[in-house]
Length: 87
Image (cartoon, one colour):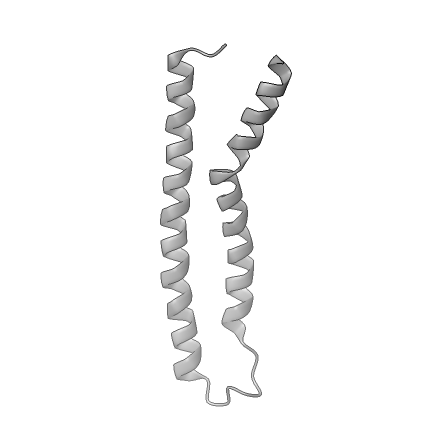
């Protein structure tokens, strides 16, 4: 059985993880809007050239999705496993 202090530490860690994800998401959106704006304003032949900002958004978005999973869903699975072990 966990103590109140251990539970507080877990909640503090979860809160820091979620806050980190939110700030990372805002940075991702702002930077990607800037990259798409640069591409739109500087690329003279948009039909024939590749969408280079899409590759950056896809790679970074994959890492962001992993961070989202860890911030919101990982602890639920661990809690469920802990409950099953105590039964």
